[in-house]
Image (cartoon, one colour):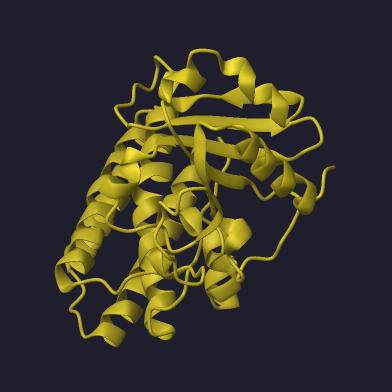
Length: 280
């Protein structure tokens, strides 16, 4: 596997040799000092270029980065149409390295009012980029919710929980799982993030989709959270739904107490409804 030094040398040298590439920026986990480095970290790279289309007319130019296992070009996909001005090459190489390379026209620099807080400039041929602060994850810390956001999170959780119950009762597993692992879990994770944030003055980054929750949650809460992940059995999914509800109630009360917000009373009526559907 190529080392980080080898990869960065390659990324910068390609840009140095190509007159169309005017600046190079790296962002993401590799510039985050709070992240434990490992072999699976991506190289999140932005090439600011002249004439994006001159690159995208023939995609074979990216072969210079190495032999690929698989590549995805999100902006070139018919299934997921995009109107974003950039173009991305997501490349996984046979040595295990991965580069998420984004091409942006140099004209986009002036349109950006701010840059990702996790960014470093690797090359700037024309001094186009502004001076950046030292990389930090301030853009990614959990923000303190307003009382309205706190209420909305509860309403979304309890409303969609009724859809999960309906799907399970009808033996519609794909629908029930979509509701459970989509909106319901998202609201549970959000409330857990607020729980962590309220205990740490809202300076904690729990990672994308809450991937670092285990680092900050009390062991008892983490154990309860893990128990909310079921398999494909209907009984397991019912149990997990009620586990999610109990955990959500617990952390909602905690967050409400810490922030001075009044928890909703919707949970009581919804839980009665869920048990009726389960027992019907």
